[in-house]
Every structure is written in C-alpha cells, then in structure tokens.
Image 1: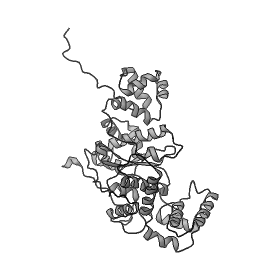
Image 2: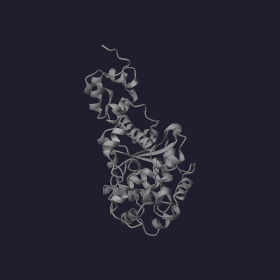
Image 3: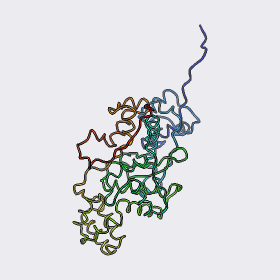
Length: 377
C-alpha cells in the first residue's frame, strides 16, 4: 500500500468562538454542558483552548448553538469592549443579558468590518468635545442642520461614520456605545429595535453623546450620564429653538402631545427640558409627571400618530453594495461562517432599501448613505 505523503489537518477549534456562540444564545456553561451531555469543566476547557472537542462533540456544539462548524474554526473576533452597555444598564439587568447583547454586537461588528473590505465605510466625522452643549451644536453643524427638530436621526448618525448595530429584544437593555476595533478606531452604537420612536431616538442621541464626550473613558459614573443626557437634549431639542415652543402656551398634557409629534421626543423629555430651561417650575414638572402616571404614560406613552421607529441602514447597504440589491442570504451566510437564519434575522431588524419602500417626496426623503464598492477601484 502506498504511504501517504501528507495528511490534511483540520483547523483547530477556537475557544473564544465557542464562548461567543454560547453567549449569543444566552446560555451558561452549565446549561450548555447539560444539553451536550458532558461535564461543565469540559466546556470550560474548550473555551480556554486547553482541549479540543471530538468530531462528534463539534457536531453537537454546532447543532446546539445553531452555528456552522466553520464558525468555530475562525480566528478570534476583533476587539469589541463592552462599553457603556456594562455601565449604563438598568440596575436589574443580568450578566447573561449583557453577555448576549455583547456577543451579538461583536458578531455584527465583525461582519461590518469584513463587508468593508468590499465597500468603503463612511469617513468618521464625529467631533470630539468635552462640553455637552457645544458638542451637540458641533454635531448639528457637521450635518448642516438648521434649527428645529432633528429628523432622520439614525440615518444622520450613520452619515457621521458611526456603525449602527441592531439588537434583538433584550430584557432591560436599550442601547450602548463603544469605540471598537484595533486601537478603538470605530464608533459603534448598538440599539434594540422595536422600541417606540421617541425612545429609540433619545437612546441613540444619548449614546452618541458618550461617543463624542467620553472616547477615552472605559468606566461610567452618574456625572458622565448627566453629560450624555445634556448632549442628547441639546441635540434633539436645541435651547434656542425649543424655548419659544414650550413657553408660548401653558404646558398641559394636550400641549405636550402636540409638541411630541413635532419634535419626535417623549412628553416626559419635553417636560424635563422645559424645567431645565426654567420655563416651568419643579412643582409644575412634578404635576405633569403625576398626570402622566395616572394615565399610565410613564412607562409607555401614546404615539399620537408618530410613524415607525427609525431603524439602522448600514448593514444591508454594505451587503447590497457587496452582493447586489437582491441579497442572497445563504451566500452571505456561507461566506462569513454564519447561518442563513442569523443573516436574515439581522437584515429584518434594519431599514429596507428606500427605493423598495413607500414613495415620498424629495423633501421627505432622508439623505442617503453613500458607499463605494471597492471592486470598482
């Protein structure tokens, strides 16, 4: 029998990828080990890279985590700190939810970087400021915004070079921001989709404030949160523009509802802005909050005719430039070691191609995000 001159060896399993896949599913090591029928210490060894799973165990891992075997043979994901997600979460949020949100965002961020090999990302045009009010004004200036309401916020943020990542519904988690990648080069905002439009916009504006104001900070304090809020309030409700609106008539719930429709922020945010600008007193503010509590609006306000919440557009736009407007989900999945379900689910959380949506007048259309295919260069 002729001897084998060489034998092809499989690329070893990357333990970091196993952990990423486990956290993506919101599983603990104990739960995963029980599902696989192995000891928890074996899962720990695999994730640390001190042991390799057998072919049979790899198949079971792939099945249980709903990921192709090729996913686990990849190199480690790019640097993606947990950012303000770790520090700004509601007090009741669990570590597992944080890990799940982080794993999802980390995977989508990696996909964006891989797609950027084919289609150039928007240049980063974020001002770096320390004063919240001036920072907000600089952002509006960078986007050539005049006074008044800030329409199409998410699309505008993407035009500033921010990578927007849609997140699935996660308990007690709304959004987070982080500078990620090599040397923390890329500004990223992760946003849970499916929230009310006013809530989504305030979350995004708040996280944009963290990116602009706190680039070199890894922790979080109440003072930093206050700075981010002041930035968001000035960005969405500039003092010079909204003061006349909120002082022209007595602020009642009816008046706040009308202003909400115009400024696309919550009634609570408008009332707080009025108090901060000394248009109403603390006593008047408390009264308005009590009235909203009686109606059950403190937790969920009426939309008053507001449209669908703004969604990120970045990921599908990159995919369209790379693969064509009719994106083949299976092709994308195969090329980037994902599953078709994951890719399709990701795209479903994003904004459709505007050309495929309802017709709007030119004045109503948001500014498009321009990407250049690198294949043409």
